[in-house]
Length: 378
Ligand SMILES: Cc1ncc(COP(=O)(O)O)c(C=O)c1O
Image 1 (tube, rainbow, N blue to C red):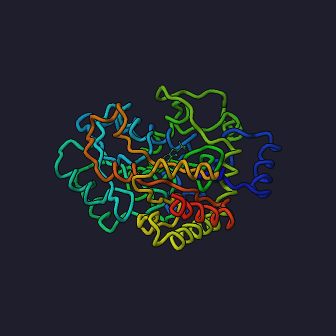
Image 2 (image 1 turned 90 degrees about the horizontal axis):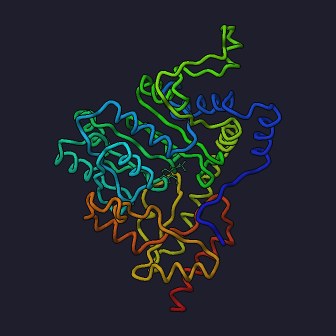
């Protein structure tokens, strides 16, 4: 079965991991610190604005827990329904009310900035908005107006850039950003996540929440080397859990970062190839033409035959699916604005086909010919 996504590891990755394993220090350590340094310089922001977690899901929960601890007045969070489930879960779990906005659905898969602006202007109780790059797609040209409005209204801007690691500054436009290093993302560390906070003081608080509530965390070993006495003692400032990226994963992400341009070029190549080959067939969707430097997801339009097309491709050994199934369609979220016709339409007519850095030319040709043969055989 050709998967939707696939990690790509090589000898250099194995060497990087092997070095950490042989060092006998595989937990939180120098590799994690170096990864944060490199991420900060990649995004040209102070190092103190970043920290690592075990996943992007944990990062988003941390961000909403922080907002909940400071904000009691406003309660509504605006977000796309076509988004990662963990975002809505964090919103609800932290006591906020999700308000879903519809996607553009014509040119790209995200809500227009204008939809957020209209929703903000209609509601006094907005505490935060969540922007999500759909598989690497860039924001539209009204984004600055939206960001300015949020500053004026003191509304937090959170960016889910989990699958968007090569699009210059996405993830750092707002107050908070998150990225994922799980096994299927463009940069895989098996698992792991990064948080960005515009305000380093907030980052420091969230960082304590990632490390048992210890303030300015340093390992006992580091403290011993810094000549402090009783280096084994650490007092928590808040009752927190532990969520880190260990040095094995961090070394793998660092090694993968060296290949990021190559990974993205391969994914872009296949996106262009699918666009070229499918253009003019019923399967072609203009949603794939939007500016996208990361190219993590490709959509075909199966019209009213979505399931039939998915079954047909499954029989041919090609995995398909739909990311991200509209959250408002589940019982848990139905009551929070279910009038989202474009999200409903795209989710019931489109399918994601495999697009990843391990795809071969032969596989891509096979995917295209299989899609075309669906129309000649049906
Ligand atoms: C858009 C998006 N946000 C967040 C996440 C969560 O990432 P993680 O697996 O690191 O928790 C994912 C994972 O699929 C995702 O695709």
